[in-house]
Image (cartoon, rainbow, N blue to C red; front, side, top):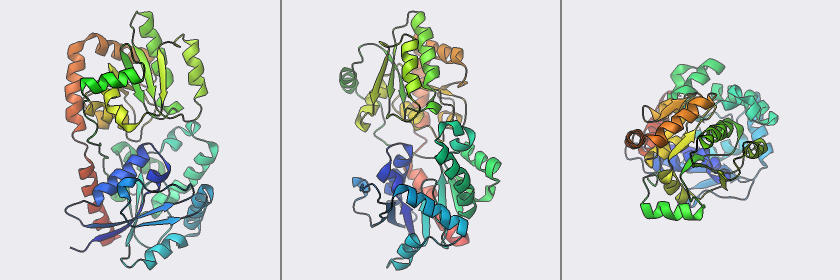
Length: 386
């Protein structure tokens, strides 16, 4: 079988550190080892920041374009508006000895090309909750995503919810949208008691805690968790809320809310935590909260379940797909329901144990090997019918 030649946008793993970065890196790693479809993967990224692809992919052929981030995004958009091949990438495709026949855009940025293209769409949060994005980003994505989805030969949606959004909001052809679930790193598994104790000591966790993991931004709905914590504190529960994640935007109101609710001694902001710290933090948590207003996928819920932590999440967007029957689901707007779900888990050990068991079984269904195999098969179809 001839290899499938792909020029693959590794940019998210070069410039970002959240879910998009994990997707780009892990999918690339597993595509290179895909046993059924031989994938000749060549990496592409915009080198505006001076960063490079992750060390795990250092031996992969790579091409870069030194351009400022704004210039890069606007020039890609211009190529779609003008419907003219994006020359910097078209030149790379045409000049390679082993010519890449397909381009995979792993984030929401697809140049116009005459070769078949695959576009991964993670979410359409900017459409559903534009107030949680900058106005400039909303403008760019509202104009660009309609063009990108129309131009793509095939689209990968990371959830059925994202697929439904694409059809409803953009009238995208259902036939070219393929749901391919993301996977989970095997490092996410229950940590040893010693590792849990070390993490607790490092982060000053001297009493039971609830955990939230993710970028600190409004759609994560930290406010609901804080109000629920205040209710539990009033009842005499001693649990803290540990909030792990790099700071996003519009987060100062949450800092103020901590003080307004009298939770200064009950909330710990750890900031960014190294990947190796996450499994013991998850494992040691009384429960993990994800009361988000919207999630494209919901990695923290999946990671928590893999580490045998009970999970409470909102019943919106992709989260019900990810957690199945292995978590307690509540409305993201119902603080009383969130507080009650937490109360059930921290006061009923049998329920917490059952959620731990179900969660591990549910998380085991999401594997990067499956994601890579389905993606490679889609590449083959895109080349055949594109």
